[in-house]
Length: 292
Ligand SMILES: Nc1ncnc2c1ncn2[C@@H]1O[C@H](COP(=O)(O)OP(=O)(O)OP(=O)(O)O)[C@@H](O)[C@H]1O
Ligand SMILES: [Mg+2]
Figure 1: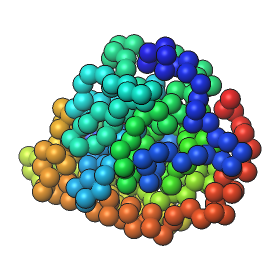
Figure 2 (figure 1 turned 120 degrees about the vertical axis):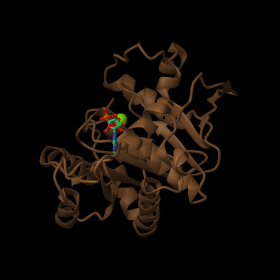
Figure 3 (figure 1 turned 90 degrees about the vertical axis):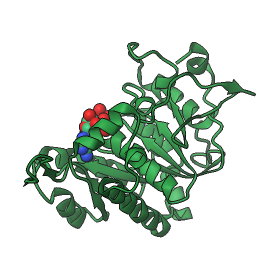
């Protein structure tokens, strides 16, 4: 990121009344996991495209400041333009996108402490000129750190989606993610099980490489609905790596249908879980911890 972006004052800071609305955005939806590498970014990309295929105006905020994935996954190159003090989002397959990866070369690591990360994230959110979005999908890094706290406390997130594999170790971390959102009063809209089954492309044999049914059990125990299951499929990986996600490469295929089903469940979950004024009050009352 250019030094001017890092050093500018955080205009999106939470005021006394809690997080202020993000201009041009109706709903912010955070995609989180707990454990790393379970497919958050890939799922976020395809989910954004599925929501757009359903007729919504969709944006993507890459909140993984330490390891941004979205420019590659959405096939975007170059740098965003700045006009009248705001950054213009870059378009990837019709998705308005902003990522720190668009401002740095691929080999430069981000080495920042918490407060810098908090400020940079707020700037990406509030100083991008989002154009009339129904949904801004936020691709979070793994874990439950400064970036998650900033999202929860300083930015008006409508709800979070937890991505997990069926594997016990991933579910353990996903539960921590769930607990974190609960603590900061961000509604969890549902759980997505990624890499559920693998069908061999040679022989058609079905295997549950990471176990079976873990997310469904977690949804039953913890409350949020299971939004859907996605198989472990080489086309998903190839699409993500090449900037041609399956929703673009095979929009009518079975993998895309699975993402479209999840997008519809998400829209339903959001319709029932819109934050009430009580929830907003509770969130603004959350004590300031760790960040700034
Ligand atoms: N359903 C799937 N089938 C096949 N490959 C997948 C699937 N989902 C994700 N992948 C692949 O798994 C790898 C990890 O995915 P991704 O980067 O989306 O995970 P992540 O949870 O965002 O990781 P991080 O925690 O590092 O941000 C990538 O190579 C991606 O292409
Ligand atoms: Mg990621």
